[in-house]
Length: 118
Image 1 (spheres, helix red, strand yellow):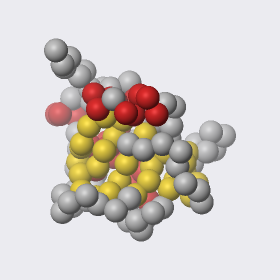
Image 2: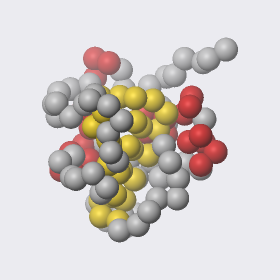
Image 3: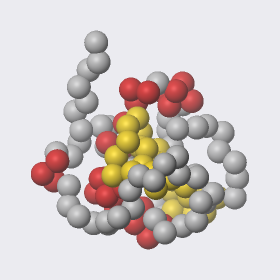
Image 4: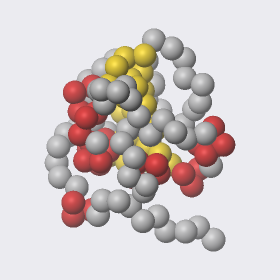
């Protein structure tokens, strides 16, 4: 039996911060548990509605991410409402990876291959 997710933000709390970016995949660590985005990367979109953006808190294990119940597809605007810090990076090219610096709280570009998949 699938449990209903209890999202941190209610639908009425979602404001139009960004438009026309399409869908993305995000971890429940962000939308349910309230962590800020820790890692964001843009891969080749899977279809016309996919922005290619993938968002994690950065604390998820591969086992956690392999469980389809721990992530979902959202409009990029929804994730921008959870963490507006992602907005300046949304026009980045495919293949770009950004990680939140623990000390400054700012995103920095990473030049590496990720050791996990969403």
